[in-house]
Amino acid sequence: MTWTSRALTLPVAVLVVALLTSCSAHADTDTRHPSGTAPVARTPMPEARFWEVIAAARGTTDDTARAARPSALRTQLERLSDHDVEAFDLRYGQELAALDRWSVWDAGYAAAGGMTDDDFEYFRSWLVGKGQSAVHQVETDPDGLVRLLGPADAAKDGFDDEELEYVADDVLAERIGSDRADAFDDHALAADGDDPTGTESAESTIDLRYPQLAAWARAHPSD
Image (cartoon, rainbow, N blue to C red; front, side, top):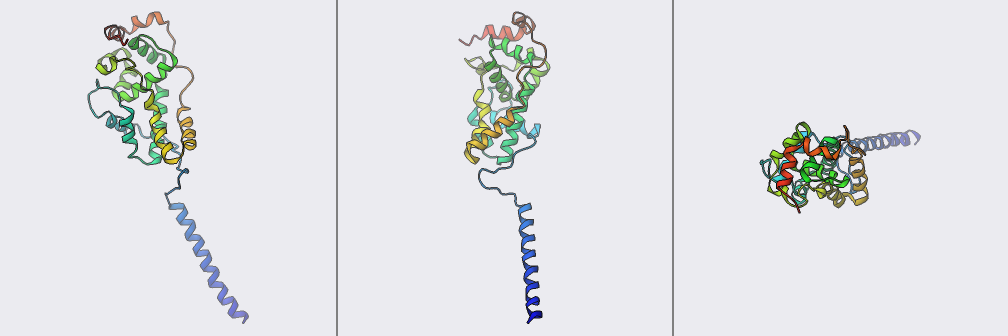
């Protein structure tokens, strides 16, 4: 009886080990996740892919057309996975941070006829929504941004695209809960510095250094 008991116990033990091994392997390879536990994107969306999403939201290749609308960006992001939306949000925050320069501030000041701290944040969001060409232009030749301005930009608050930066967070909040989405949004926008980089200039000199944008602002008063 002793031998028989051991003979029966050994196969059972082997079976238990096999089942545990199988479950462990399944857990390692299963990419599904319950609501509220979506994986955090540790790297931003690739730059090329990010600008493809923005371009799709704009719906045009005309660089002078208006910046992407929040509703159009939402449509694009709703087609992506939770992870990709988070990666998009992280890239968005990094793009805002990269534009946090005094030269960009000055360009916005000249084009809008003035610039507050909040205005500057929303202006950078507008630049991102305007597309890669606008961002490249303001980074390399800020005054040349005038060539990309169109009728929609002349409207009141034409350079204000505040709501665009909240779209990814809103999409995530609907999927994984507001607390989780808010936590990631704080992480994504942490890349944004407190003060612009570069050298601050006297406001009285901005129109002289950005004559094309200043002339455009005078020709298109927003009030």
